[in-house]
Amino acid sequence: MADAPRFYAHPFDDDKLKEECGIFGVIGVSDASNFVALGLHALQHRGQEAGGIVCHHPEFGFNSIRSFGYVRDNFTSADVMETLPGPLAIGHVRYSTAGSKAAVIRDVQPFFGEFSMGGAAIAHNGNITNALALRRELIERGSIFQSSSDSECIIHLMARSLQKGIPERMEDALRRVEGAFSVVAMTRTKLIGVRDPLGVRPLVLGKVGDGWVLSSETCALDIIGAEFVREIEPGEMVVISADKGVESRHPFRPQPSKFCIFEHVYFSRPDSIIGGQSVYETRRRIGVELAREAPVEADLVCPVPDSGTPAAIGFSQESGIPYAMGIIRNQYMGRTFIEPTEQIRNMGVRLKLNVNRALIKGKRVILVDDSVVRGTTSRKIKEMILDAGAAEVHFRIASPPTAWPCFYGVDTPQREKLLAATMSEEEMRQHLNVDSLRFVSLDGLYRAAGEPDGRKNSCPQYCDACFSGEYPVEPSDMIAKGFELKTAAE
Image 1 (cartoon, rainbow, N blue to C red):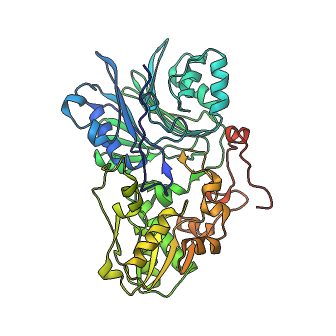
Image 2: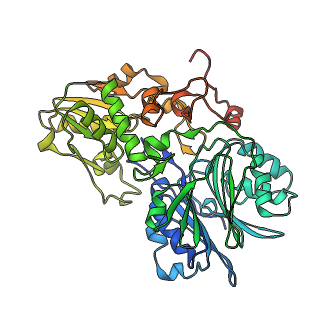
Image 3: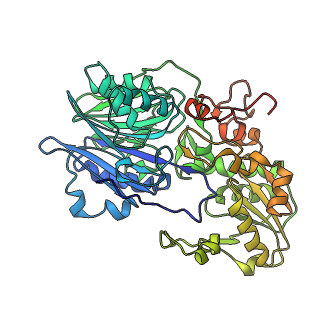
């Protein structure tokens, strides 16, 4: 029987870009699945739609559970976790990008495959930009797909490889793949981690007791008391076993790193470390750059919680304008309104955010947010601030205008639905009906991210395609569908 579709509405966060998943794996500890569940809980911000864990026990073999909803609702029961025994496990939290927008259980990772040399499971963060072409080729050659996810292509490519070992088959498969991928995989005895040659998506290595950990972010190492060892390098594969420890390979042709700069802006948790830098500190420095590039006379600097908070602190520190919590976030909204009535939907952002009226009334307010995507949330927040009696509203945005869709693992609207794709900065200001609107410059963002001379236009240090339209990997599937790349005139 086909899986019944489940639709997860995001009616109050539909103006934010969504990172589609987080990955985590542990080897060499008893009850590894418990560690994975904790790690996934720390990575929940990377995907709230569904999650899964696969484990292996020498006596009981492979076991798995995949469920919709939050980690805390599915992987905290002792009865559930007892069904996931063993010293080796991997996990995944998901927000759909490639694949069906109707959530079905067969799309939830990790994916598992049984090969002649034994089983293997794989969890993938990113997007395969030639997945449609690969899927068509594999189906024509007899592969039978179980999901709509691009990640399943990797399992089928591994199955068709002539290599003898599973790590070698994975190397073979990933050489056929284009786009962005950080992968955590497991066999009966090995934990495997891989990053694509450009290193677009993150992956780090940690140590816990006598065991090893792979994680999308360092904040998930902290929750299990693991020691951060290092980042997996772009284009690197690590194969970890109990007897040999960590073995490093470099199966891909070296290329300049193109880490996703939006991880610094929004996706990663502020308590994570990226490239040796605190994400919180980078976001604070973005606010400093904003205050230098776009000063304005005002009475208060207020963040749009929670993603705008570090940049608002930096803006306040640099400008000398007092920082204040002018907007309060309702921490307990959860999924109460998964299927809201039209009346509740029209309340919009008010269910999540409320204005501190006593503070705002009569004040000239600078609102600091991380990004503007469609602009719908920004307009509602502006209206709330004005309704509370603000004298002026000035928006300062801690990223450049988002004018291009991402094809590397981020759920982005079609280009025509991105406000910055069809409007200039002044037109956006008029559309939002605010007193002023300014975005941090691309050079300012790079400076905040640790590049004192800004962006090297001849060879950018990061992937910034959502701002610049310069895609480091050509999105071949989307071009085949009619997507037009940036022209020289743009």
